[in-house]
Image (cartoon, rainbow, N blue to C red; front, side):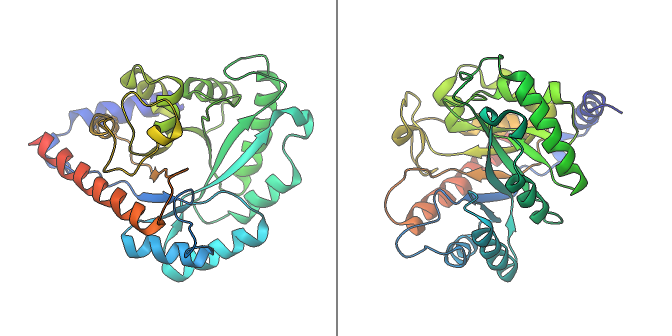
Length: 291
């Protein structure tokens, strides 16, 4: 059964159920990206994992900084009983047929059995953002990478990133459709969507829904233009995140939701506390909206 048919069948069943029988709050795992877990007193993976556990996060989504660092994350997470939900890696199209490096494959092999997404952002200096002239290179590389990941039971979530080749959700969806691999999907990043688009949330989520693996959120200002205004703790900012959560629930999204804190200065513990308080308030509002 194709992904389209499965999604259509799932949606038909989901909307036929009595809404009152479903839990009103989101049950998605809520994890912290390591863009907001590190500060002067939380430098090592062990210190960061201990912090996110104390504050109630389900795990982390770190940036790849080498094999040794990755093993430290694994050890710390295993000790605390938490999970690595995604690992942030780059696919550089400018390498052509060598875009899928040995390091990428080695890292994917290390993720086997951990149910961790490869969080892949696609870059190029040869091909401009949101163009299609690099698609042949991208599709070939992504097929090779997805096929290798599949042999290790690993899924890949393309990460739309401002000013990179695949900077829009629609860019990532186009690539996923052309690659046509079940273990390749997309991410919805609120801050990047607001930066490059921000116009029709429902249309973007509808486009992404059949392939949506991961979502990231942050506090933001409705008229924000830079990362200072588009990435804030969840209890701040004028942009209302509740409609996003309501639409994710309506779509039946069950994947993990990550917290983006890139560029937020100060105490990681205090910033994360503010965001957890904001998350709990959003959950309470979601319940209230359904009553």
